[in-house]
Length: 393
Image (cartoon, rainbow, N blue to C red):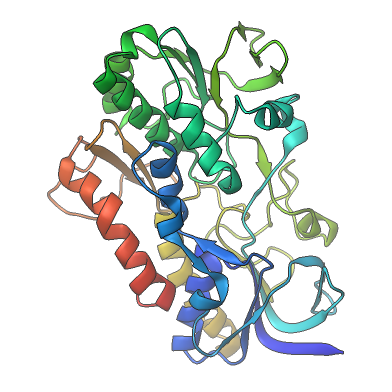
């Protein structure tokens, strides 16, 4: 038996739920979200939790509780899509028909890309909040660092889910070690794929100041290539080996779920991202398929802030496509928020060509500010639960 929907959204994260709410507000027919996860997380809080500033349990809700009114939830993962027949199949064998398909399933760890990393996670000396089920392990890992320890963290290469925000956890941990007096005796290393810390001239100066303050050694233009979980070594693609590592805050390489490539909907990259037009978010081959969020090839760094504009554009474009009207364009806007101390945050905002796009005129949010940190930590979650997920932003 086949269930039929006007719009099937694959993924019940920020992108999927917020888009579904926006579509319902536009009365866009029968809408369903397919996602087998039972919990919905406010993901921007993950690195705060790892850095000891938040209890992640307070930022989780049952998936059923966040599904918008009038939207149906299919509590199962999509594992296959036939774009020509306009059908999707779930893990339990349910066949779902659709008029429009929206792909926003997020990214999944590609454990095989960094040899030995999964074993290091299992051994307990490596973790990252960017693997949500390991957020508690990441917090415990950073909190038990002692004088004389060596710590390694990495900025993941793109594609990644808000990759630059790993610095939140690292800098918050460094601030905690500073308060307890052990920081001078902790050897901290940061591996980044960029020539500068995040390759953003707007906030790199502030990040460099934080790195200098905390005595962090930066390995630029480098990536983690392998982990020797028995010898506790981190091997970089430059050939350098960081030995005697006590704690590794290493985020794995990620990729889109395999069903996207298997359905012929992916681009040519190894990560298998959905081949969407970066401006209209419409698939390059199949006009009834759309994509947004981390798993879409949009030529910009994924973030929750990016989703706000993507959702607005995509909700308008599905309606416009049905009416035969011109499509709106997404400019690639994204954000990178980083805590540089216990209570100060810098925020980079830019569009696809790299130019700045400030959301608050007259205020330079690229400078460390306590007010920006407070808004990110306390204001943004309220907006998320009460407005964004309800399609009101």
